[in-house]
Image (cartoon, rainbow, N blue to C red; front, side):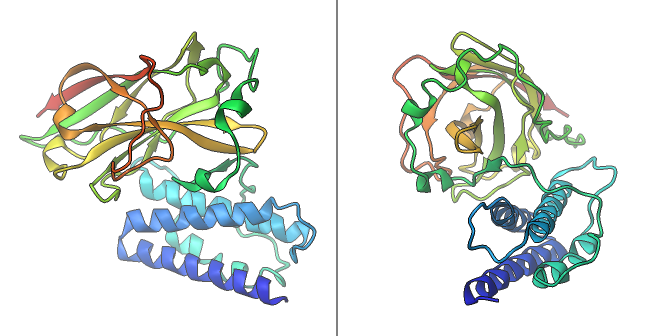
Length: 306
């Protein structure tokens, strides 16, 4: 085993233990973050084509399966309605497999498949990639159909149970205006609620893939149930909407732009909010408008007072 591979396995092991520790302590936001970061690293190695890898194709497949299990555990922590959750004790069975990946030759303990080739980037990770957004997307997707295949099922959560005196919020994402709307492949929106430091206050939710595109609009028409009562949101919090789409040339799902609404904008009825250039700035310190054209994210809010 080379020193590089030894160091890599040590980093993976440390990350796995951090996630499992956060999970066992009930620090779910931190656990989800750790699991998703490790899953991305494992997925990247499982799909690597370089010749200097010490991992065999079978070992890469096992690494990919571990990444899938990390995603399953992450999804279970974010879901309130999972029928067959992937439990922490199940996940812990994978730690010795990951540690001894170079010598592991038994059947994988769970019936899962490696994560797909597509890669979802962490916020800001796009900054490290060299590509020109406008030039690259100029011809991509031209002539694609007006409807999207349902490849992303979404991770939407149900409305919160009612509490006396508390207000729950439903946000309908109607559509988003983009100059190249017709060229976006498998677009969806990630919705999160962050405090002023960019820390998640609720589970992150993904919409399903958009229902259709028309002229300069991508249509969603989907309801997001905020996972915290309005009265319990901290001062300075904001609701973020990240528009993401698949880039076949680079084989990953990338954030194209984002929008957000602050607490004083929570009011019943329709609203439009401005779009900003990536990377997503959860702290709202360095905001740059995506375009000077009148293109926005169109929402409709419904307040449910108990």
